[in-house]
Length: 149
Image (cartoon, rainbow, N blue to C red):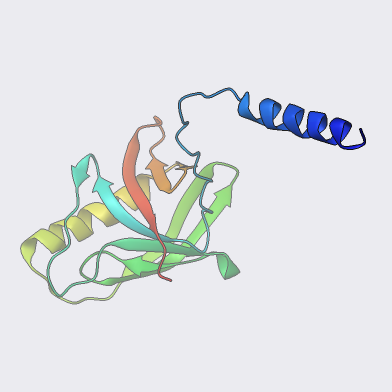
């Protein structure tokens, strides 16, 4: 008689655990990457896909939190400078590059990247994507977070 309540409660638990609602699996929501201290690889610039040339670094940015320091590559030359963030506003300042000559495509991409950084007004991170937008809210550069290790 003592085992009857134990068996009954075990049966109830087993039946209840079998009665689950099954719904279509939701796409996992990816947490937003941080704006600073993230390696941001350039994907598109003014709507154009960026390709990396063999034996050259990929265009990317890292906004170092310490001293608001900007570092990266244009896909041709090393990129340095600083940035200011105020909420969703961002401004790149004192941006400079090394002076190495590269193939024409990379030189054009470099000039476009430098010009674009000068017109950026706001930023937005959505998951692993960083969009830099102009004053009209149009994305002018889109980056993808890359984890190096």
